[in-house]
Length: 131
Image (spheres, rainbow, N blue to C red):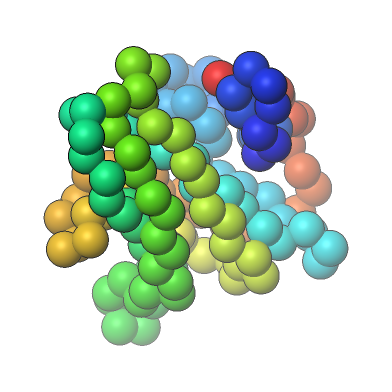
């Protein structure tokens, strides 16, 4: 993800044709030299609101049958922008397995979430979007 004059430009793995409701793929391939993923959020907030929003990065632990938090990263949101507020976080050194990135309030209330599977292998064809 790169911030541009027009907004953001993102390179991503496109979803399978049958995942028409997803904007990105539900799988993410990593290589020994590329293990970073990004979580992008677009949030509408009323004018005058200034608060922090959090991305909670979690991996599913098969042995415990539970989600394990790997990091919780905050970024500021200032309300009143017609197009909403956009922000992103990144998680480096991803391990293979089932991951999710939850968008939360400071108190931990869930705003949104995406879940994806990380595996080692060749990169899928990439797409570019500007938003």
